[in-house]
Amino acid sequence: MGMGREKLLKEIEKQGSIAAAARQIGLSYKKAWKYIKSIEERLGKKLVETQKGGKKGGGSKLTQDAKELLEQFDNVIKEFEKIKEKLEK
Image (cartoon, rainbow, N blue to C red; front, top):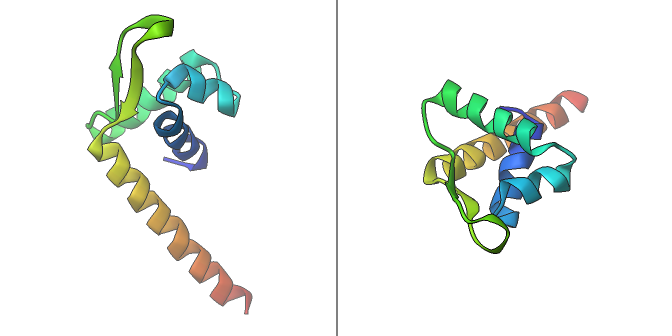
């Protein structure tokens, strides 16, 4: 998990679509799916739920596990920033 994958997951939540999220952050749909699958394989948890439906339906949303992962990742980043600030003083 890194900043790019975090951004992708947050954008999926915002857009409700993997394709729209990928476009928004400058990734191909295929690359976005590759990132999602790699995280899911490493964690052994499903992070994105999809519903087929094409242009007029369907969509994607984050699972509760994904939301918890993002929260934990944000906490790690905040702690890192605190440490960085202390070191810079």
